[in-house]
Length: 290
Image (cartoon, rainbow, N blue to C red; front, top):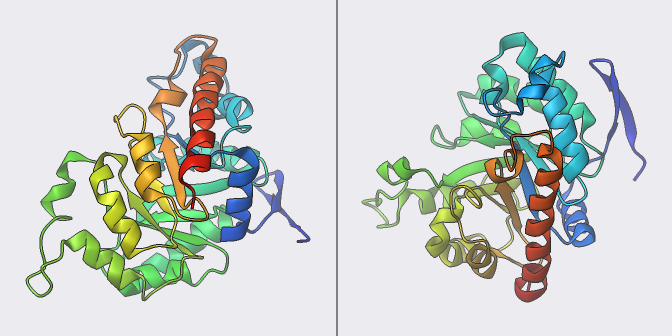
């Protein structure tokens, strides 16, 4: 594939289209399906970075330098950047431009609105910021999701069965027509909107008892799995019941990596935690990838 070169906010980056085969190739090459959540909180980063001109970017830069060997994806949570206004967006732009080629990028933005608004969101994150994927809330229906799916070689990561305590408020409500829980109805319906080459699902790691059932419903799709690490999700159980023949998992870890240390050794401690997770993932890939 011949790359395209683009200029964005003063940075040059290579435009590599991250298709499903490309993503799997990087998983195999690194023997890792680790996604790092860049939920960068100024109240938690090491104090010595606060004097930097851009503390958020400086922290992210050092984390990326220390961890990209083991990570196949980075997922900035937009709330941690939006809270700082224009400066936060600048930090985000610089972070995305700094991530090495061949690493999948997910805008954890949880967007979703009427069609023309979703189209603007899609243009912002796919065209202007060059993310590979964006998290989308599905509960306004097809017309709120389809504008994101209209972008070739870009991905929608649909919120389906999340790991937060309140997820049962709505996601487990049973349909009067089918008797199935709402999250299952979302999977079944959304599979009519997009293919496994452009649609992923968010399945929380703390819902490990559901993975076998959900994998049966969506045998080819990738799952983005938050909740491993600080939230206590079981990586082996997620892998055992969630993997398919192309791995099919991106397991996200944020706090346990980013804040492995609050001292000047924070990047090295983050690297060590990534290495530990990647070594465990290599074993699980060999054991469970069909």
